[in-house]
Length: 253
Ligand SMILES: Nc1nc2c(ncn2[C@@H]2O[C@H](COP(=O)(O)OP(=O)(O)O)[C@@H](O)[C@H]2O)c(=O)[nH]1
Ligand SMILES: [Mg+2]
Image (tube, rainbow, N blue to C red; front, side, top):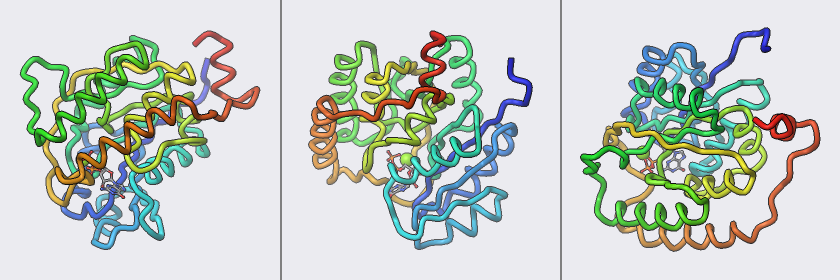
């Protein structure tokens, strides 16, 4: 049906990831060559911009730090405006394995879902080396979300995700702030978009610092829990008639 070639965008949110961003971009270009690479330099104060540019990425630079939600939403907006068919989100810290993007793609194709999320907790070994506070938080969110969305979610804070055009347009319009991944799962459910998880291996970050130190975990938990419950009651922007999301929904996709 589609005459022109399918277009793929890899979005790499990066805040002070000079230690790893070059390798992340290089690995994307090697393992996922059909993806154009867009690094969102989220107001970094280190060399992130130069390193990402040197590695051959296109770099969109925020004049100041917006936080991960704002960074990823810039990616969605870019993808939507430039008419990309698929967008994959890959952390700038080296945690995600570009070689496994094809696993996400295969699942999207075979299951016909709008979003595929790489989960580090689906294999049997199950000992991803996250701090216990973080793991506990993840499991509590997983438990609550799995009930709210009526399907098993094992790794709700994973940012290793592949989105189709419907998901891109939804999140270009509205994407949660601060710690967005958990709430985004709930948004998908509200908008009747589908999500599948697939097992992936994930690395620990290569350098820099995580946004979620163990001291911040309690704060993170409370904040995201509140966001979840407020999210349940919150009015959602409804797609305009004729927009991609509405059109494909009426085709039963
Ligand atoms: N910490 C943090 N990360 C950001 C921000 N904006 C973009 N990012 C990027 O978002 C990605 C995920 O953040 P990270 O701290 O690794 O979260 P974690 O993997 O969940 O521990 C990384 O590639 C960051 O560089 C921000 O304002 N703060
Ligand atoms: Mg990370």
